[in-house]
Length: 289
Image 1 (cartoon, rainbow, N blue to C red):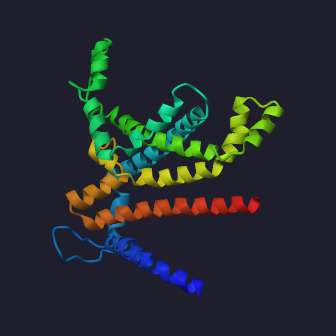
Image 2: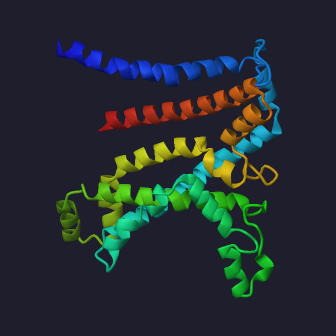
Image 3: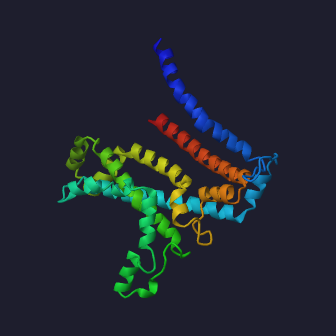
């Protein structure tokens, strides 16, 4: 009876997921095999023509490379700095309680506001960054940092780091609180120093949380649209183009819904392969314990 009641209670959630997740997913894959346009109602099935076009599209490969590069760089740096901040918060230093109370400010600020702040700071005339450069005698470096092909991508990375590192820090800090103090005491008796404590006690103790955070942010960063769309729109000259922005541009600027859907489907395949590898690796790890 309890089992039937449980199934009955989850039926509404299953129905909602099917309507708002499963159906759009399947329909998107279907549309990827058509020449559907946002400017007309009639369309025809074109087999794999969209996919053949994608694999010969140079902007697709630029966007894919940028997506992978952004994901790898951002996730690695967020992990490193997040661990450093989490470790710092475990130390008894003056002002740490105040820092803990304000650390999440950058994460709770809306993305649109964050991008606006950074774009204003990067302005060539009134931007904070360029004012500092002028005042220290580096006026020759003044530029619009999001508009320079050499620096735009780096500033996108900084946007991600500024927003997400505190979230990593707080999450890892919370995970560190669950590690028994007896482990640190035993390590101290064995003569372990601070670095050895961190490497052999802290990291193994928060390993599962690290895996979860890295996995979530790989998926999130690879799919991220708002940061780049609001900051650069994929420019200048495609230097910050990523797959989500390219899908949007094909579907809603060029009105090529079928072609945009085919790029989205390729993104789905890439992330599905990653998740399969992750799950298989996790299962093997569980079996070895």
